[in-house]
Image (cartoon, rainbow, N blue to C red; front, side, top):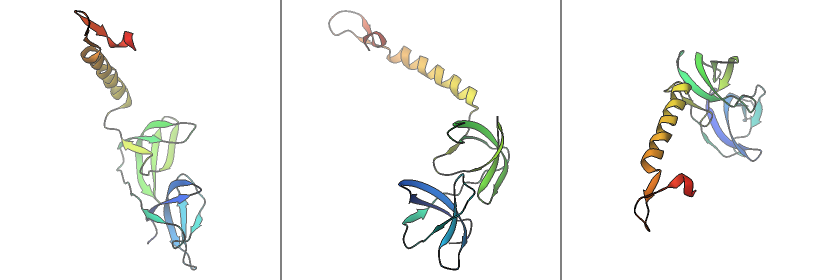
Length: 148
């Protein structure tokens, strides 16, 4: 596979994704695992792998991205499309180069504030519509939230 190809494989008991940097002379791939800067040697015959998704977003695209354990999920805007597999994304804490993989991001079709407002509206609607049931033993209804 050529440089830039994305792979998904099991490493250290975890399923991880990486980008091939180059094919080494000895027949192994030099791969950079997501959110890392160092390169690991991957022997294609000894490690089962599948092709992983390649994500490319244009500047201005809004994303929700899992940055790391310290920052968690953050809303950001793509500044630069991928260079060496990484997008440059502007987050509230600053611009960061991020590997986008199958599980760490999604397009932000709504701004986070609008999404949270819509979820509150939806929750209220569900409570109004489904918050009570007919009382099987007496006339009237039972409030589900009081029963739970």
